[in-house]
Image (cartoon, rainbow, N blue to C red; front, side):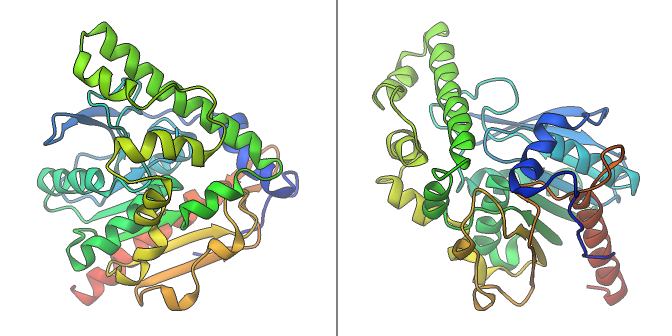
Length: 335
């Protein structure tokens, strides 16, 4: 599989690469089966399965990004590509992202590796004979790399891929407030505030006064314009962090990379409009089992090539091919 990515000439610059998928791509049509995973704290995660039911077929857990879901087009596209190889996949919805508000005041965030661990444990129990892999995009990639560093040799994964990772959350919170990227910031603010508002409305309708009071104590939801605002006033106190600085430090995947012991591929673009170039890790920060694939162009979860009539999606070729290659190496070596 070639690692050469030739960005579409008709999508010049990082923003058109970034925006093509969510705004212009035709959604892949997949038949999927939804499963609800109940967590130990009484909340739930919804997962959408696609592909063969064969107990031995390789299985890939797919993790979406901030304000996304299992319905994000990059998720659907990867599940379609994996099924074409005879692989099964399950797309995880972080708490409250499946179209139904979650049950607890807390939500999801860039460091929610405990929820990822619960999903992986569940899949290992469901299909113990299947090789298990994980692919994370943006926020999902950050959570995945953090989990891999925390779990070391006990990750239960045979391989992992992370795409367009915000390695340093503090620096990315600064970057998205610059230039045209402020358009993305405004979009995320609207979606994240709506996420909390919807939960407040649910708690009010259900008479969940104690849970509602937890959210009300966070203060009014207006006036938040930046990630620093939202994460300082909402994310940090809701999830046990002292403040935004504490959250960003403890949740940033860059600080966990050296402890990764699972074969991992990281795919990034230098022109990512969410991430400073200096936020990317240096070679010495990566473990020996990590491949870092850096392209000059590609935007954020973009990597579109091909022609206007027949656009191509590099990630949906590269990721399944890389996973298949390490599967073959593992089978050949008998490990």
